[in-house]
Amino acid sequence: MRKRTSYNLFDLVGDLGGVFELLITTGGVFLMHVSQHSFTLSAIKKLYLVKSTDSQLFDHRHSFHKVHKADTPLKGIQKYLHVRVTNLVKDKALAQSVLSRHRTINLSTKQECKLYFTRLYNFFFGLCCSSKTRLTVLFDEGERRIEKSLDIVKITKDIKYLKMLTTFKIDPDIETKF
Image 1 (cartoon, helix red, strand yellow):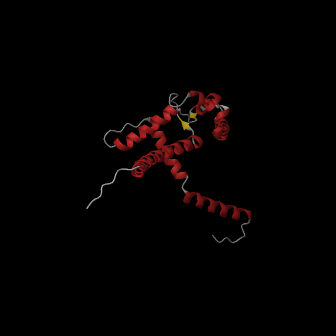
Image 2: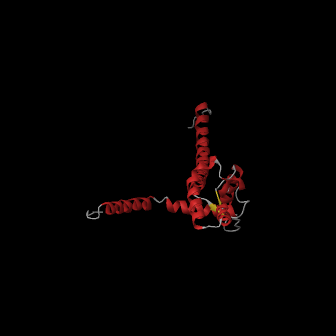
Image 3: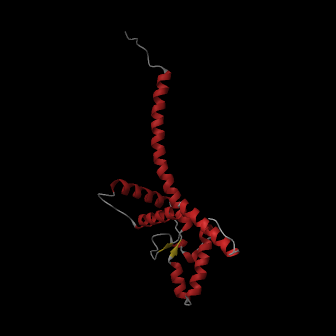
């Protein structure tokens, strides 16, 4: 025999909790991809310059030869590159031409969102209709380089080899046990 019970407040809260958990999980999956994209884009901006003659690819105000005070993360790299190029190339016009092709990566929020959704579209529909833009190709190359250079095994081995090298250079008579 069954007893009939009414739908009470606790049943409502339990059902809503299940719906909220589903929404939170779905939002978490979406935000994980946005976070990964944002991290990669931020690392690319801080670690790399783009060599391009296309002034439309990035804002021309942020090209190499017109660096602003706000663009300080790459200022050391740009200064080093400037010294190296001007020492190697004696023709000042040619040196300026070479330096003007190296651009800092400066994207507006609209461009960043467009890049994210283009990559998302290519992920789902890339097999049937690929529409890779130049910016998408540059992002993929930067992502590949970051994954290669931030490999923890490679970094650990490089540190170990540097330790061995410095130990050997300081005192070559020491027997090292590595």
